[in-house]
Amino acid sequence: MAQPADQAQGAQPKRPDPLDRVYTWPHFLIVEFIGLMVFVVLLFLVSVLLKAPLLDLAQPEYTPNPAKAPWYFLSLQELLLHMHPSLAGVIVPGAVLLLIAAIPYFDKDERGTGVWFTTRMGVDIYRYSFIYTTIWVTALVLFDEFVGTKPVLRLLGLPDSAVEFLGNIVIPVIVMLTVFLLLAWLVKRRWPNADRRHVFIAMFTVYVASFIVLTIIGSFFRGESMYLVWPWELTHPH
Image 1 (cartoon, rainbow, N blue to C red):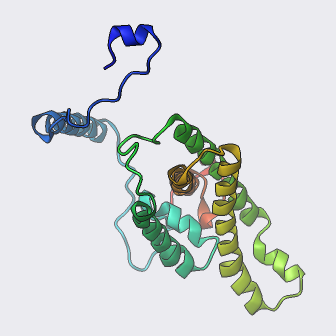
Image 2: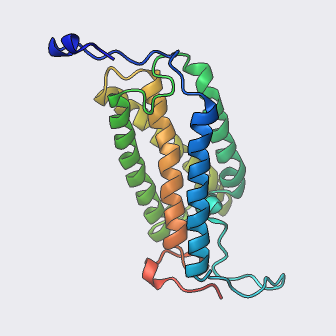
């Protein structure tokens, strides 16, 4: 901490010494244990007070409509509606995981390590990227639902094989790359001082925001036969 005389002269407070550490035991584990106990109590109360919306026993010969994945897979299920299954279920998730794992090899700057968003500029970039991604993802889902890429390609007189290849693979890949590259360009243009880490913050925010938006759409806006509906129009699977 800066001395009072330094603060009176307008000096910036010093950052904490990295050697002034908080140890795992007892400081961190006690906080984790208290958090665990609070969560268990809340989960118990919810299980007692709220009735779980369980359906009948599963039947192998019967598929409910809509058949939705668990919430943590709903984003991938949403992608399956818009592109080739191999692309949505294997290539895109695999590429995202590889890119996330590769970040430390490209960002070796130790400044700001362990600090959320690194700087104030990082927070602004995160907010900008989240809004940017939300608009993009929502617009693309609405376009594919009410217009669709394949009908547009068929109007051009293309054969069915070309329509399937372009609509399920080529165009989705181009759109995803455009979303990422355009955001990187916008970040560098809006924040000229943004370094590589801040660009990575923007790229990672695209992944986080896409996951959240697609999960919300799959949970509350996909009804029978996976068509878009308003949340109050959702019915139990049948």
